Image (cartoon, rainbow, N blue to C red; front, side, top):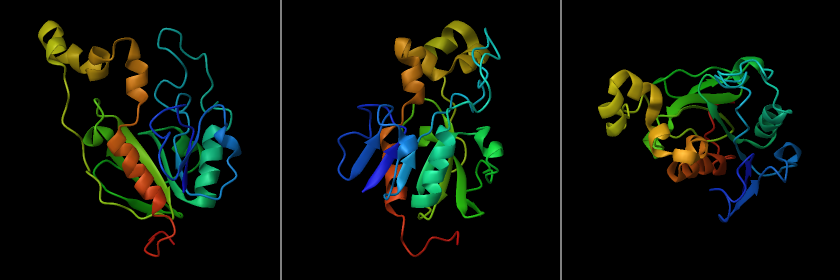
Length: 208
């Protein structure tokens, strides 16, 4: 059994064997254990636009996530597993976590292993650069380095390379579901994270 923390209600972690999902209503900050975790703490206040919309900046405080990242990190330390956040998340500096580097594979430091991976390699429409933080889990060999650039052919035709690159793939295919699609976890990537969490307890953990 593993626990999936801070996940969308009725999302891709629901109705899976041996997976216990914790959505908003359940409040994953209160997860009591004892199973390894796949943690997706909210990233809105830690990412590039932590301050809010570019049209209305500085309406939020950096890191003001009601303690969600801290709770996810505590569960990771206690029960093992994997935590996922956008690449260059400000949470890494706030919690003094080892920083990964693109293409460098796994870095083991201070009881954790970290890496930089792009979810486009695992089914996401955008490149979606991601940092993974693991504890007491096996470290699989992932697809390292940047995924190929994805430009929508219609955007390229209408607006040219520079604007098509700035717009991104999701803005062209997502419609009203842009935010949902941008934040979604592809099934292949979900299964990878679950496999990492399920490996907790094997003797070949190299971080200790």
